[in-house]
Image 1 (cartoon, rainbow, N blue to C red):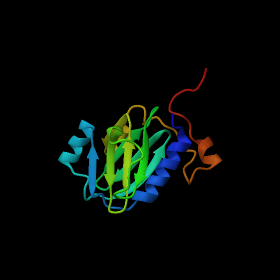
Image 2: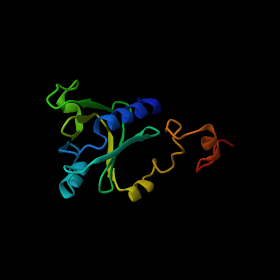
Image 3: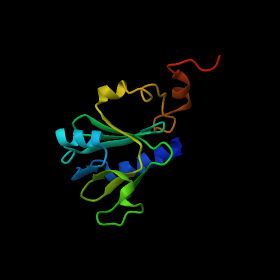
Image 4: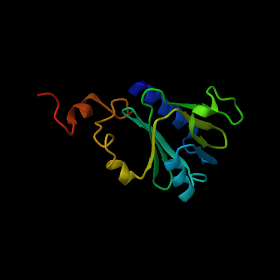
Length: 154
């Protein structure tokens, strides 16, 4: 199972590869994601930010659309240049986000949802996360000031 530091590095790599780029193609085998892409296409949107929060990976697109993914036990994100051979078989592909210079491919990602900033605050399991200790602006003082939204221990 990918741990928080692995998700953090994955988000940082995806941000470097896709951040600020315009999406030229979006493909998915997941019906709920395909429906959103059909209604409000991702092609033409900009990848504004890719970040991690705990074990969640968030890909923010222009127009207040966020792709939220969780790897659970077997999921992973890979990046490729256009035309480059994938390391995994296409049957394992769940999502492709393509720009002019790079492709991000999610393999075997079991949890993938589109959200707006507002709906993300209501997402059970995500909305109770504390501060991100690996975030660039985290300090020991800022982490100790935050208290979890639920009791710990007895």
